[in-house]
Amino acid sequence: METKPYASARYLPFGDKALLIEFGNIISLEVNHKVIALNEAVNKAKIHGVEELVPTYRSLLIRYDVLKVSYEQLIFRIKDIEQTLKDIKIEVGKKFTIPVVYGKDYGPDLGYVAQYHGLTEEQVVKIHANREYRVYMLGFVAGFPYLGEVADEIATPRLETPRLKVPAGSVGIAEKQTGVYPCEAPGGWRIIGRTPLKLFNPPQQPPALLTPGDIVRFKPISEKEFKMETRK
Amino acid sequence: MKVFNALKPGFFTTIQDLGRYGFLKYGVPISGAMDTFSLTAANLIVGNNPNDAGLEITLNGPELQALSKTQIAITGGNILLKINGENVPMWQTLNIQADDVLSFGKMESGCRAYLAIRGGIKTPPVLGSRSTYLRGGFGGINGRQLKTGDIIEGFDTQWLEFECKMPEELVPQFTNHFKVHAILGPQDDMFTEKGISTFLSSQYKVTLEADRMGYRLEGPLIEHKGKADIVSDALLPGAVQVPKNGKPIVIMRDAQTTGGYPKVAVIIFSDLSMLGQAKPNDTIEFHKVNMRQAHEKLREYYELLQNLSSILVRS
Image 1 (cartoon, chains in turn cyan, green):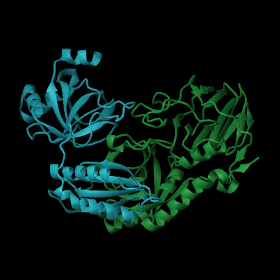
Image 2 (cartoon, helix red, strand yellow):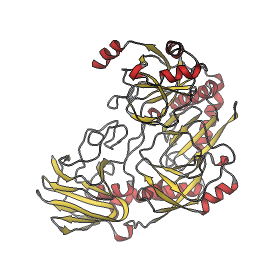
Image 3 (cartoon, each protein chain N blue to C red):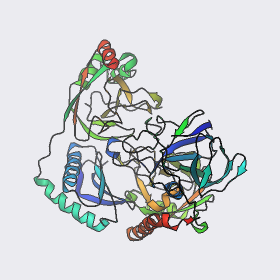
Image 4 (cartoon, rainbow over the protein chains, first blue to last red):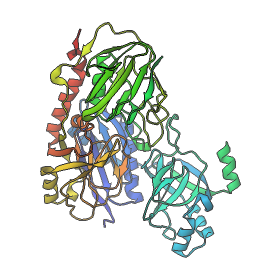
């Protein structure tokens, strides 16, 4: 298993309409910082022909129009931008607090996670809520944030058989990642709670509450507070 | 303007335009017509913009009763088409009177047909597109497939004084076998030489797990060098993922926007429309092209789309 970022970024073809720039094949703050920094810098450069940027854990995908910029020209421009990144201070993303009712029907796997680590449910909640997570990327279903990293004390493998339906708002753990289901979807993450917060609201622009690079903290709330929030 | 009442919904009918672009970073797939060429052609035949919304009809068509006078065109996979029980042709303007009943028979080749209505189908656009994204539950008619009793609305527009027809030689012919061109990468270095040559020299069968999200294929296994997982990165339609079991998965328009399997290759854009017509048990073979060849083909394809409207035969 690789443990380090690549010595230099890899520029890779992604079909005839996109370029992929990989910084490593690991989940790490350092790698994701590079992705977000390049994302910001390319955005600002407003390169003619660049249509869309997709930052992920460890790579940046650039969709481009070959009628406006050639593959070689694009690589040349991006490498140029990449060179300047070392001097750029990365802007810290926006901070968000996500209220969560933990356990019971809202978090059917909280008991399992506690048992798996020899902890009480209260301890799991405390550990989960007591740290800041970085939004590494959005994917899986519209608006689903991949957040990292979960403390080793509560990092838990996925379900062996995924559930066919996980309710909207469910907060889950998969190894060292945590995430929130914005809508009902099938899924194998260990569900420990649920938020009344709407993470994805398509008519709005932008449609998702969170953007890669943002910082998230979970706040335990009571069932009563959850119900009041959902009624709003 | 109310244009059609759905008497029968068909097997799987959705509203699609050319796609929802610009929201991949929020996890929103591109969606849109699986065969964008056929939707574009249908739109141009009735004088619409290429990106206007139409119906994507899968395998078994709906039955639609006209609620007003209109003009339509049906393109895509070869499907038997009737107005008030009488056979009518695809790929040309059809004039429809109120109360006419449009019905479809069996799909004889291909998998998806497209119905364009003069002026385009009217639904509230979501994030700049009318395409239905089923899993997200938005776009089209409340993010779902057509059901009995749905009313399809269209934009009011002028009657087209001439009729259009696609020149015979430009009507795509779909068989049960698809040859597509692909550029190796981005993670082709995770496969052995033998794995790559297997991929490029074999025929792969589309399994029953084939829908708007993607096609799982069956065929000779593609060998990885070592591990078969990557830290998730972005996906686009046309990407060919190979999980640990060695069986490729072709990513299509409603797929999730990120994935954790290495991608051996990505199918070129101009071949992807055609591949949108593949159905279970059809076979696919992959041919390698380099970037220069791929971009030549892309330019030719753009040129064809650009000129398509003027190539149509008018009468």
